[in-house]
Structure formats: C-alpha cells, structure tokens
Image (cartoon, rainbow, N blue to C red; front, side, top):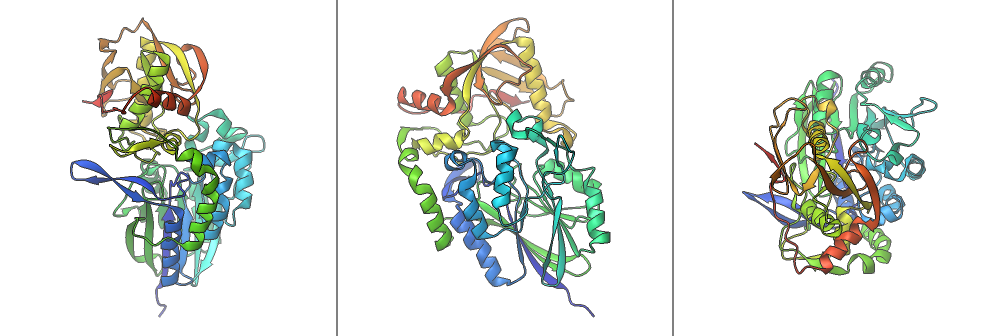
Length: 482
C-alpha cells in the first residue's frame, strides 16, 4: 500500500516592492490600528524556516505585484529586487504591475530571475505567441507538480498604454482547461497548482468553471484569507499585501489532496530577520535613505487605503491636487497599495512615494455633468459588476468635490441615485473644472481641454504640506452606498 506524501506550499503575493519593515493596518474591533510588519528579511526567514522543517518538501510561489510600488523599485525599474528574489529562491511567479516599466524591461528582468515567469494569457500582438511559459513542472518528494501561471488581465484594458505595448492579455479562462488536461493526461502530474493574478472574485468564478485544479494561489485584491476557500475540488488561498502576510499550505497527497492545513502568517516585527537578506536590503536601500527619510509634515488623520469607496489617504492626495489647481473636483485611481501613515505621526518623502510610486503628472480638464455621471457609472460597474470577469480591478475611483450616492446591487448604468458637485445637485449640461492624476484619473474618452501640468503628484503633496500645519483628511462621504 502506497503511503501519502507531504508537500508544503508557501505563497507570497502583492508585496508591491516593500523591501523593509513598514506600517501596516490591522483591524481591532470597530477601528483600525497600525503595527509594523513585512520586509524581505522576515519573509525570507519564514520561508527558510519552512524549508528547515520540511527538507525537500517545500515549494514557494510569488503571485506578482512584486517589483513595483516603492521609490527604489521605480527608480531602478524593478532591478533592485532581482538579487533578493533570487536569494530567497522562489519556484515560479506570475505578474501584474511588473509590466509598469514596459514589456521589454519586464522581459529583461524575468530573464535575470532564477525561476520561471508564467502566464497562459499574455501574447505578443504581432506573432500571437505566448510571451512567457504557460507552465512548469517541479519534481519534489516523489511528487510531480504542475504549475500554471495567469497574469492580470487588466494590463491592456484599464492601465496606461505603455504597460502593454506590443502585448495583449486574455482572462485565461479559455486556455486554462487545455493546460490542466495536458498536465493531467500527458505529463501525468500528481498535483495541479495555479499561480494567478486575476483577483479573488475572478478566480472564484474560474475554479467553479474549470475542474482539475488542486490549488489556486490567488492575488491582486489584497484579501487576507484566514481560512482557505474550497470550490469544485480546488483549495484557494490569498495572503494580504505589502509582504505583511505569507500563506502556508501543508498538504497530504494521496491520489490528490487527502488532507491539508493552512496558516495565514503575519510577518510581524517579532519574526527574526534573515541576516543575509537583511544585509542585502540594507545595502540596496542605503543610497535612498537621506532623500526618502526627510520629514515634510504631519497628519492628524490616520491615512490609509483599506476601504473600497473612499479613503483618507486619497483624500489627502486629492486635497493637494485641488489646492494646486483650484478645480471644482479632483479624481485619482482606486489603488489598493500604499502603507498607512498613523495619526499623530510625521510624513516623510518615502510616505508620499508609497502613495504614488510612479509619481505621475497632475492634469486639468473640463467635464460636463453628463460625462461625470457616465464616468462614475462606468467605474462603479468595473468595481461591482455582477459578472466577476467584467470587474477591472482596484477600488472605486477616488473623488473630491463631489458627493455620490448609489446602489451596489443595481444593474450596470443604473446605480447612481444622487450626485452633487460642491454641495449642489449635478447639472448634466454644465461644464465643470476638474483635476486628476494623469495616468488613471479621468479616462481618455471623458472631458476636454486636457492639460498636463508641469507638476507631479509628489511635488503637489510636498507643496501642500509646506502650506499647512497638519493634514486633516477625514472621510467626507464622497461616494456612499445607500
């Protein structure tokens, strides 16, 4: 009689380039609190501890959003991360914000990594060929494990055009069954693992449609799943963001997964950092510290982005844009990333780059009331669509100068109940002045008289901080579900 075999899977997702220990939000009853967490030295320590416990029985995967999101990452176009990632030694990876430097730079970085970049849904526009390998196979502890990668589908749909130059993306749902079948029937694998960056709602629909997936490692939506979700024979986990959490699955395999145990591990300050990785991080960060650690202001509001409809962090960003431009309203993208800044604390330049690491220009435009209504309906549908495959990532567009009341459960195009600009009911025929983050604040099809200012987002926030004593960016009910 064959005995069952053991396998441990470690998941890292959505670290967004947070190399070091940083502020992280945790919920405590009816309010958020801030504690230190994360950092690659502690991530490495936890993964190495698993390897020490289960020699030759550990696979570690990175679900992407790894090499973009902090100033040092953007300045080096992701290359600062490569030696550290290689030293930790993952087994495979997929991608999303990795494309922010353009596909050619990302392909260059992927070739420097000691493990494969996987994506069944990323194609060269000219040749139709896959840009990256669709899957890899690992033989470990007498097991044959097939690993399939799915990159974020939204790269060529809602993100700046430079991200996807020469590349097109699909959902991967049509391709996936064929790869699962090939791994099962031709490669004769014992386990099928999908490393995905579609987002939790999309991945839940995916596993319900596609049989034969044992494990799906989910990412993109920054869910902290304390318990795995099981659907259609698949075990699905996701492990927060910023590298503040890691997922661990201990599996017992005997003709499929017989038993499993899951941990959502907090990468807390109490975790002993790996010395070698810690030294690598210190050396990598040293040139940037004088610039990034300069204190520029303070906040009386707990600034964070951990809310779907409105966030205090983006209220601060939008306040700076409106102060600079004098516009009636302002918009930014509903980004999820960005380490929180505790109330009563100082604001350093590093905090500002964490808010907008790509530091895009600020722009102005004119927009009619009717366009504003349609733009917000479109954004609400992309956030709350009943069909997960139509959800396009991120939270609701961040707004200032307006108050919008809507029904989440209503069909597309019929969600908004009331919309006000500067406290007055929207006039659909009136033209309003707007300011926005250039890349993703107002889509190209809305507005006119668009102008990029010779000021970038971080400069705008620095200027705003220099003119006030303390940031006050409380929730203002700009977007309210009713």
